[in-house]
Image (tube, rainbow, N blue to C red; front, side):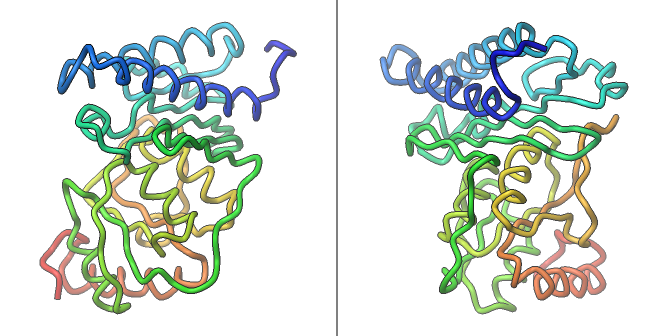
Length: 257
């Protein structure tokens, strides 16, 4: 391990640098659509892998854009990244895409950063706080695959639902107070969650599965069925709504009552 950068500083710089790379290749306008999205994924992944190989060669690594080396399961320290979360949004000129970088130690994100490059900001677990105050009265959910449970939660609370692209964008807008919760069902992978959860926990938000169970990372099976990120004072009420919905419908994706 090099002495040049602390884990916190390295996490933040990787998120910042990746965002700059992605904005650069999109900004010149030479690629569009699918070709732009694939180039973004490839270039960002290559740069992150090279950085970690130089600065943290002994750590494990898990990324959406790389073959899974299960040797990570024997590591206490594993970097879990999504170089470009929201490839479709990035490739079509939307702002709701993100960069996810997390260092997970013994299953828990200890350092995390989520970059929203089009907004010019990197949210860092080392220095973050969630916005409190009046409720926005909005629930963030998947723009492409809105789960029934999110609609049920919103209806029970008297809130509206808003579809957003990247998981990181949804989580960070809860942190900013634009939404009061992010409710997801229908499946994600560890790279979708580790960094947003790490930053959200550091900011004082509630993060869990929809049944209230703890989120743990660096598992052999990287699939995670569902996620709740919300203002802490809403957590118990939302979890109770989720439990009642599951009892009635058998899962979180059935028809909303």
